[in-house]
Amino acid sequence: MAKVSLYERLGGYDAIAVLVDSMMSKLAADRRLARYFAGHGEDSRRRLRQLQVEMICQACGGPCYYLGRDMKTVHKGLGIDGADWTAAISHLVGAMDALKVADEEQKEVLSLLNGIKSEILERP
Figure 1 (spheres, rainbow, N blue to C red):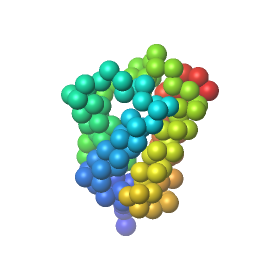
Figure 2: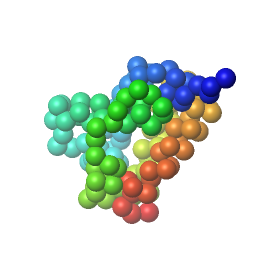
Figure 3: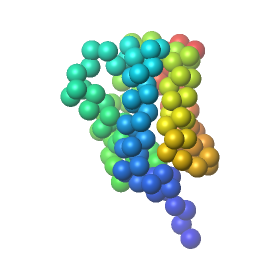
Figure 4: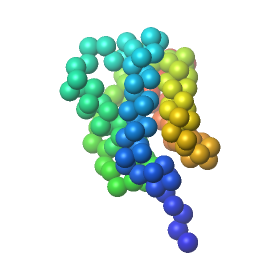
């Protein structure tokens, strides 16, 4: 029997979109991280949201195709550090908890993100 993809276990596209929406609202409301969203108009925020949905969907084995740039390019010059990373991850975990994502799936999502952490952080 084939293993069910993380995409399917998370609930598919719609569940990933809800997760991204929840996480993004938490990130933008966090005074420590709000600077990363300053100056973005509504269209830019919607594009960022869509790219995040597509990236997570693809990374989790779903049918999406991420058309965005690589993580190093996207985050270059933002000065994201370890404290920013920890804050963002805490919001993601909070969003997953609120949506009742099972522990095993949470661990897999976090593992995927930890795999690209070095491409996002500019300072430890």
